Image 1 (cartoon, rainbow, N blue to C red):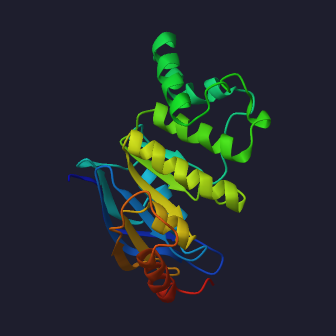
Image 2: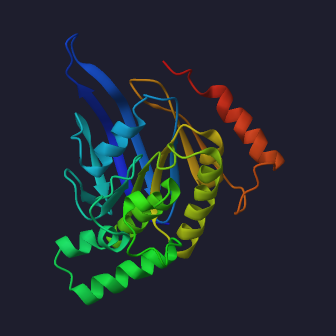
Length: 250
């Protein structure tokens, strides 16, 4: 497989009233084409900050990022971000939200509508094209967010705890749906979570992060067949092993 993302010696420091606060230490990571790479660790350990640096939304204090060999220093269409909160435009319908990116880039109406419809169908929202976000459940709004990112056809999808605000049952269903969507149309995904079951269900690899300043504590390659069974003995063994090395939340 080809390396799509290469982050080398990334650090991030923010100024504060008590002096500089280092959120990310010295982190180097790589992601392969069509891989689901999960960043797992305690809350407030720097996972979201690292995702924003990769997306170009925050400048790294030091280090470099390359997407398919090209240096990345600012936001661009090669990366799509699915937020913890859906961040949909409330005045736009499902179709309007999903087609928004191609519309801004000047894609012709017929082409962008066909593309948007394809991804609306893919995420299971056929029939809800004219619905506004307020008319949709939390899980449905996240499906719109996923379809919107797919419609921009990025090389990399960055997902920042996208199911963290959902109830337990909906979260479980959305994990299954994300895997189904990814199997239907592969993308390289970096997925941030602090939920161990979610990490093991989705990941090809799990990177366990330390508390701030964030570093990679250990890497786990997850070789379990898909779709995964939460009660599989190896799933449970990995759950216990990974949980045992995670730093307590500060």
